[in-house]
Image (cartoon, rainbow, N blue to C red; front, side):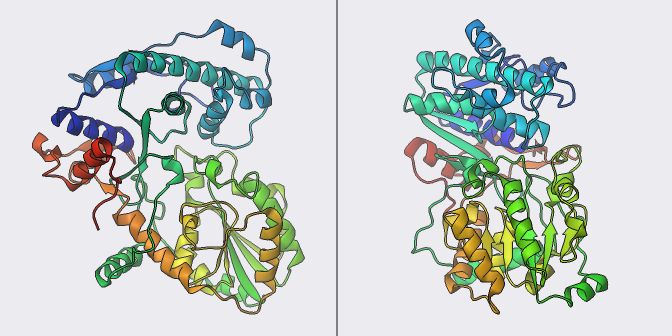
Length: 480
């Protein structure tokens, strides 16, 4: 199973052990096209519903389950039949933002942000809109029957979970979302939007000597590339900066690394605060690059852009080629499969530019000034410069480029360490006692052998946090 599906399943079991009634809301061919079962190259191919339902039937055996099936709304079908892609993206039905949920899902499916107004894209959008509305209606019926106290969904951004969350918010039902945590086999649960990673770190939280040692041990591995997230190891190896790069860099006054993101990632919805999206940010930077020939800009594509099975179809590499960036003498482009050390780049940098990548947090940890082009998880604390407007961003960028030295507020590094420790060891709930890699699919897991009593709160700190959070509304945080 996927990690998030397993977290949900184990929590289901833990709640039932406490005598809490749980209903699983499960799909029985309830979508004409779904996020994971769609063929991005063939919209006519139907999802593998039989295999999916068979697995759900097996997994949820003995668990009260409300199955939903697909019942298209004829009136909705008429409303969207002649719309173009832009109209579909902005489509509302009975106040529900069906187009917004659909486009967030489709960007992930198609591995791109900008969508063409072609028949395939329009069909996908119509399928997702109809399916989202069906789920919304089906879930409303369940709510009317069961009157749930709390609803728990995966991330809340894709159209199935977004529709469920919408119903809950509309009816003032408590809804929790969850996502994978930063460390292997960990999860993040919240009353808010998990992809935005809302956490409250009080001013009284400061790292102890033991916490600092623990964080330094983690960072020593991370800076060597020895880490993974959601079961994926991004860096099979890390190489130092070679002689050719150092010789080129010596010709310039300063080095400014520019770290990008994967354009279709669900985090981008929250990141787009100053610029419309990441490529607009890059277009803005391109003008700055041309105006500062004495600065060497190192443009780095995210390592996840070419992950097998999840490769981006609208990549930074494509943007670089399309804009003729490689013709500029003061640019070095590092593609996603080039495993040179980002940390060596940061050490040699004048300051660091990111959109909302976690590398910005690491740069702050290393004492470098970081200018963010979008809202990031770590900008909840003062760890980096996050201007409030495009004009302010441009003014600050020019100021940083023209300064002989860049001073960094001491609180940036302190807050970066506080935030990372909190994200690693407080807000990330460990499930490693129950799970192991399945050894077949990267990112997928299987259960270890364990006694069912291990899910009791007195036997599992993770389950105690989750059960207290759900039943007593305490924070979903591990004890310090």
